[in-house]
Image 1 (cartoon, rainbow, N blue to C red):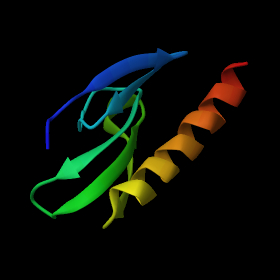
Image 2 (cartoon, rainbow, N blue to C red):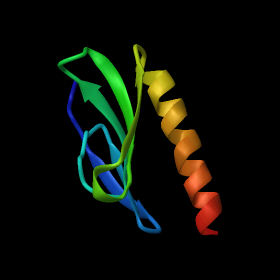
Image 3 (cartoon, one colour):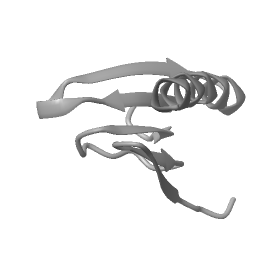
Length: 76
């Protein structure tokens, strides 16, 4: 499988697709090699982080979509 990463912005939030980032105000998902699970994360200010882990990539993408949709509604 070819690796790819997409980064874009929604207001102050940076969106990371297929990459795990530790930067502030980041939403994203990626594959965690250490746990062998898909990780969805939301990084707030000063290292505050919320994580969800899934066995299937489809479930991780659905969760990320819900988080992005929520943030988009707040911004607009």
